Length: 223
Image (cartoon, rainbow, N blue to C red; front, side):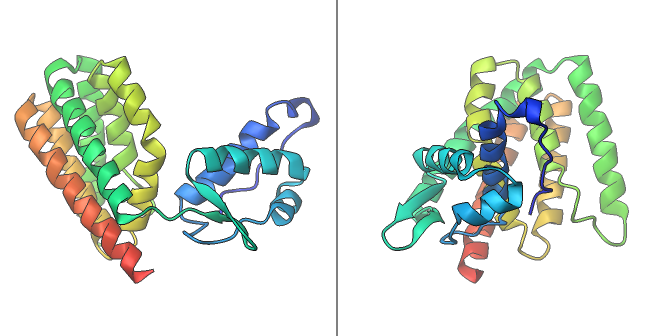
């Protein structure tokens, strides 16, 4: 469970937003599993807030498809259908591969320096006898590359899918060895962008997301 935040009285106005982010993060990180109930009273006690911001956050999350209200059961975490999962991965493959290709063509020296540092950090991690499962390089690399693509609209669309990306990654990483493999895939992606190899970066992205989709589906079957 994410660390329980401490909110001061003068911060009451944005509490509903913080509660929303807290619950969504718990869902994305897999703390709340698909089909699991989210109980307003328990969350209110845990976060030391009234049930109103909890209710508002859950309503907002339901409108986005993260939770749903079931008769006689209450609010539960939504479970995506196989068709929805495939659809999201298909969209990701199209948008991310475009971002990678554009980044390879348009990255500025500052972006390339960031990528160099990330690659060095990944190489050090992969060289260790035991791979650090706590450090997820996926999100840091994507953030650099999405900025390097220098397309605000494309980045906005990818940011809108960021929660799905994180949720899929966390579930897929439950498979033994998948996090290390995904890190190697992202290292290759970063190197292709750094070298200005747009077509290679595009193809590597599609391969990575296909592997991620398979890992996610396999992990779901084992839950």
